[in-house]
Image 1 (cartoon, rainbow, N blue to C red):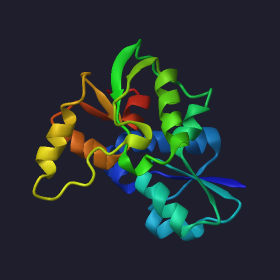
Image 2: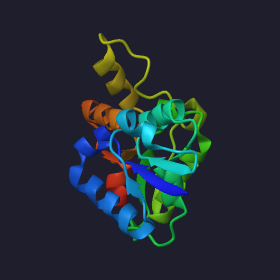
Image 3: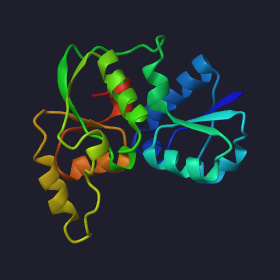
Image 4: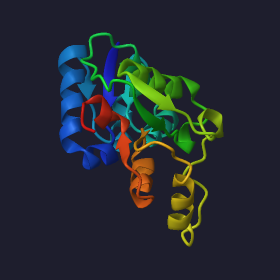
Length: 189
């Protein structure tokens, strides 16, 4: 059995240095193979492989294109990693925003929250969390910016963490101090 990490093309583009650091950690500490794009490298996976993904879109793509392999979010893996050098945010209040694409994946969402707990983050939940998550989805091109800004009004903390690059980009449009979870994990806030 082998473990394969799909770092997410969009996430790697968003944060190339952080992406490189986590790839190094997975390669050196966990012996993972590092794959490229899920759309082109899915055929490399066998039924003995477990693929870990950072991106909700990659998770969906690989479940469709590589049903022979086990596919899991990297958040579930990291949540159980006692060796990881977790930063300490000393009880800082941070809102966690779930991605619409993960509303039916409670293991992923629980992994995200366990990670935040490991970093001593005081989690602020939204009404639209877990299976109710619908942020930044189902908006037309005509009202995308207005809808995003409206959604962002519900945040009560200075910082909002998400685990999807589409959501991260929307937080920027909404003029919110958004952080991608991987960046927070790697101490860049």
